[in-house]
Image (cartoon, rainbow, N blue to C red):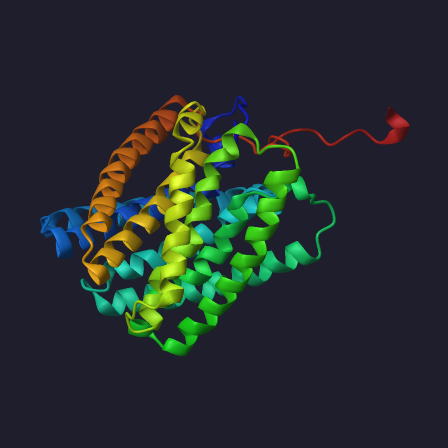
Length: 343
């Protein structure tokens, strides 16, 4: 599994509380935005959007509080997360969650939404600088450590423009869009090289392949926001690339179904939400019924998926199997190795 089992008390299990649970908040936020689009385009009751906004906010607060307690009580465990080649790239899911929440609250409480957006943008920028420095000045990482989760900081850069025009400045939006777009192209090439010419991903990291959908899908939405909603050729390239990646991954559905449940399954949720939102927007621009059907189908799939993932996650928490040491780290309380003279 993504997390190994270990006997631990409730207190010590908190030391292994996973940072990638913020991916669940991203999935819920994407689903909530999808129901808002469905309200606008398909006439679904607005109440669904409000209920999901409340649930998403509640989950965000709960996960933030638990990870904050972990940071205070077990700072060494947080440091290990930050040094881990998988866990490190999930830290920006916190700032991305803030950015997505700002979009949910834009029409409910503009000042709160704007504050969330500024905090999310500043924090994400800091995290991107730290993570990029770790990439450049690494000492022990190998090409086999590379996986699609490394796209997460990039996706965050492309999420920022979704609120830039309303909350700040279009030029700030273009800055982050430019950074995200170029690094997406660079990382996409590296990930493809790693997948084509090196050993396969760990089985339970395979759901992160869905993250490949997110950069072009969110990029399409952000470019539309920055470009005044004009459907030009570059918009079509971004949307169709995201749509192709979705079809490619859906063609492997049986392979993904066979993967045992782990928190990595939440990697399915936000990318599917991104292509769903992009399909809704493309339908609104073109009025071609096919894209409306695609968007509605993805909304139904995503709703069922998130319901399933939520049930599985709560069951794992109840069974005490949610919080375990990451591969490559030592459980708390493991004695240090004896000096050579004592061996």
